[in-house]
Amino acid sequence: MCTNPRPHWRQIISLKFTHRFIFFMICFVILHSIPFFIFTELRPTLGCNIFSAAMNSYYRYFYYPILNSSLPLTITVVFSLFSYRNVRRIVRRQIPIDRRRLDQQLTAMVLARVVCLISLGLPYILYNVYRVTFRTTETNQIVLAVTNFINSIVNSMLYINFSVNFYLFLIISTRFRRQVKRFIIKKYLHFIQKEHSNRNQVAPIIPHVIISNVESL
Figure 1 (cartoon, helix red, strand yellow):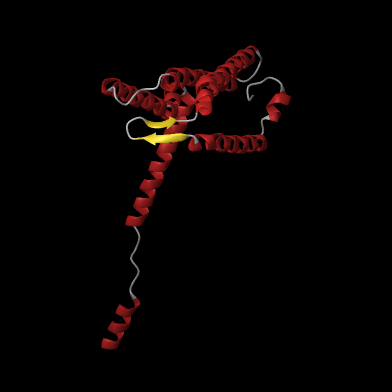
Figure 2: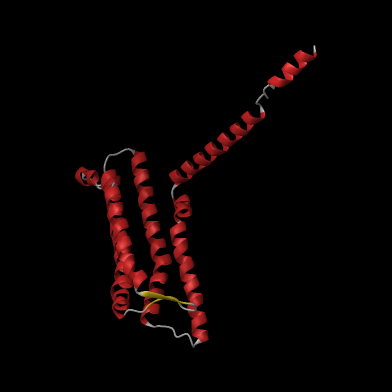
């Protein structure tokens, strides 16, 4: 929305609207997670499993393939393409060069984020669809070991997906690198100045030492 050429659409996405949207999403996630805590059971070898047939069908046919995979990926890709198109329009207009560079870097960061989201998040989604569709029996130890190994890999990839943003933006955006460099230098200089000021402080004279010296005279 920030790259949209129409001022009306840019004014809709305000800070107040963002706060309301975040509050709505928090409430939705909390309400949506309540049935999961009710209709799941914990097993020592397989972890959390859904024992309700209705919830199993919901997670198999709607949650994993649509709500947890297709919908967020589609929204991210569509808005990334919109941002790319808007930036291409901005490049053709007569605007300052700094603004063009910032918009181009923003588009590159969004597109790179989409690539990471698909490459690192899609294996986790496919594995969960497979786990819900084909249940692993506890008697087959080889299949169980392979399943747990794949589970560890896809979960690690999912966690990397949430933590890779800083390093990804650091590689792509030159402005982001400058801001990080300034922040680190500012914090380092502040720490050095604080340590230097603490070393150069003059210790106060203790009053009772002066009084004892006067009484001795």
